[in-house]
Amino acid sequence: MTASLVADDLRRGHRLRGLIARTGPVAALCLAGALTLSAAPAAPATPADPLARYHHQHLTWTSCLLGPDDETGKELAQAGAQCTDVTVPLDYTHPDGRTITVALSRIRATDSAHRIGALVLNSGGPGGQTIGDPPWVRKAMKDAGGRYDVVGVDPRFVGRSTTLDCGWPTGSMIRGAGKGRAEFDHMTSFSADLARRCRTHAGDLVPYASTRDTARDMDVVRAALGERRISYLGYSYGSYLGEVYTTMFPGRTDRVVLDGVIDPARYGPRLLRGTEAAGKHALSDWADWTAARDKDYGLGRTRSAVLATVEAIQSAAERAPLRVGGYRVDDRIVPTVIFNGLSQDNPTAFGDFAQGVRDLRRAAEGHPVSPSPWLAGVLQFLLTGHDSGYGSAQTAILCADGSAPRDPESYWRDLRRADPEDRLFAPVTNNINACAFWAPPREAPTTIRADLPALLVNATGDPRTLYSGAETVHRGWPSSRLITLHDADQHAVFGIFGSACVDNAVNAYLATGRLPAADISCPRARP
Image (tube, rainbow, N blue to C red):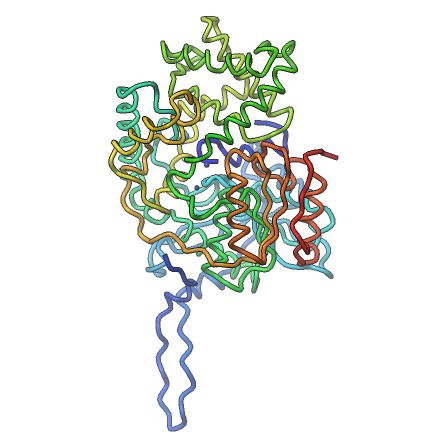
């Protein structure tokens, strides 16, 4: 999550290619209605709905295809999906003010006689596009899918919705800290500049990027679709969005599946802290897989040899930036590349990552290198403005959801206290980021309801949303059930990893609305 494109992680997972108060429903913003005086006792007043024009707006569904090069649109069209825009307020405290749009795609239920309702999706990020997900989710749902309208929603400021782009020279605020104080000071300046760019180019939007506002948008979407309640499937950050929505709008959800579960107590601008051990475990498992294929990748015949190759790459980058194609890859970028390579536990993802490490090793040895497609994509993401909109929206959401320490010295102390032998994960997870230079959030974080009747899914080795977080959430929600995928370093499982045990259990819940009688334990084995 966060530094990695979680939405890309999901796409790679299913296409086999290839980050994060008291509450009440929006009705709490309603203005008191006027009483009509009469001789008879007046009935209690019904507050006027300041969002009525949004709740009852007419939706015009059209083709999702934007042009001949729109691959997402083509896939949606082939699946029979249609698209529309929903109008929502920029600022829910002033619903008559400026508006923005939220983009939707929908595959209608085919079993209309047994239709359950709408299943709304969020594939994470934060900042990941979801509009293209209904086709593969519908396929993963098997027979249950025909009973739902499967709805993909690009959240506010993401994808085809009204965009928030700060004009960044990168797609992510996340970097390693480098080796010494000078590099950390450079990262501090880099983070401050990213925040300044957002104030300059999108200062009218960034205060309204919070998950709470996205949840309010979801409820407008629910009403505009004509649904009294919606079902929900959220991956990664989408699990937090689901937690917030069901808290703010109790009684407006039917079946809720949270896959890659975020512990809300750990969510915020520094949500990567504490994931170091899981990252090391995932790296070691990848090293085992790669060592068994030394004839293909040449990175070492044992786990220790492969890990030594990775460490040697970082050492070389500390001496001088590596030249990889047209990119210069320094010791702040190498750990971020490694972090990005670890979230999907399957041979295709492992192979892509191994090819990228092989390219970095050749560059460290001084050879000319043309990066493999996966590595080229990651470097384009990190070192150019190609995905500025993604990083801008992701950061705006995280910074709007919670405060980060503002004193750079606090980050420096955290980095100095981290394991000195960990040159790959701790420098990423403990580093300063743009939220240190952001305006304070407009609202306090949501205090999540104490008991959510949801189906939770997590892999034990998930390096992004830790299994311990899923256990914590499950303990706090006695009426929830937890599906555990064992022995997999997998982020996001249902419909992606290929576990029949997980997929069948989720689909049974979606079809019947009945949670399993007990928690479910699934082996790693794929069908």
